[in-house]
Amino acid sequence: MTAICAKAKLTERYFYESFTSRDELLQKVLDRIADEIRDAGLDALRTSTGPLEDRVRNAITAFVTILTDDPRKGRVAMIQSAAFEPLRTHRRAALRGFAQMVADEATLMYGDRAWPPHQGEINGLLFVGGLAELVTAWLNDEIAITPEEIVDAATHQFTSTAHR
Image (tube, rainbow, N blue to C red):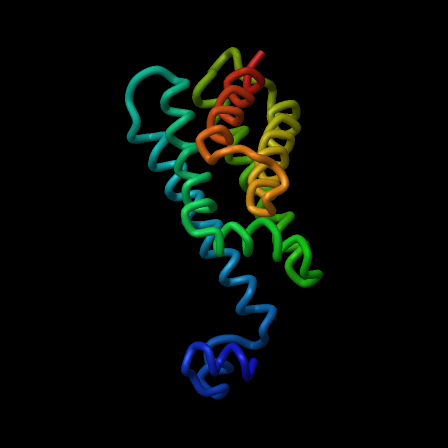
């Protein structure tokens, strides 16, 4: 806590007035990034016009842009949260929430052609997990692609598998 407080130019007393522990602070940071991603993605999806594929692309672009324009956010949300034991459970819950959001949005988009709820949940988890791993590989310089290629691949994957 001393290093965090020194970097933020805060006293430890002020820190402990806001957070009970370092773990709580890290969870709040992860929650803030997740909220930013969720809000930007849903806003892009709901305010976009045009073909469904363009609307999906805009939503995925919003997600990818947040994590790649500021790689610190990407590292916290994708890498550090998976590597740090107290955040793993919190990260999994966030990913499950995103997967349910994807399944719900697919149902709204595809109507009668959407997968039934159980299959939608499975597809949502596959989509969100795969996209998270692709962004992680990019952040770790393990794959030579651009953020635009991530968006293209994810858009194709979603529009190909989010319905019957």
